[in-house]
Length: 261
Image (tube, rainbow, N blue to C red; front, top):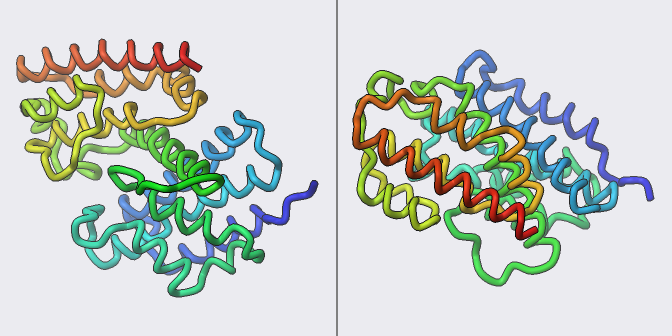
């Protein structure tokens, strides 16, 4: 069956949408490159579970659109801080309130799936009661987003991501809250983080919130655990010791998840 979703046209429309933003701004550029990688990862994940061509295109389209609100968020606040304006809410505003969704997909069949998966892609806990395709595509976009965040954290500057220099970050400690939560294999709550290094730990802790078998294989294939831990030269002995314990936990966690599936 041929797909009714024209991804080439959708990508062209995305470029048109971006024309009003400054692509030379590092934060804008970060989100553009992130978007295209998430689109590709969502396609890969959809392929791995045997979805039809159209359903696979839908996964890629949600990847393309999931962060479209980030650009307005940055224009208004020059920040990725969701406590001011949640970026998923901005994405839904652009796509549904401003009615841009039809620019990217002509059929209405998947509007609910697109709305709910984007709404839930960045929340700490997915809302209860999601079922069927809504739940499936929520898992796909959440995994795709997190997997590319691992890549992003390896290539972007700490100043762009955390508003702190690598030198300053290397001197920081890992809070008791961050360490204990992590060692319990649970994602960190943003509001409870105490240091910039806690923020770094929370990003790595996305591993505990992955859903699909291919996602854990992807983490292992890209050696993300070791590369993320090793990106920082920890000058604080407490942080160095705790990061090594977290590394061991993550490596075991990923292996167990791969074996389970």
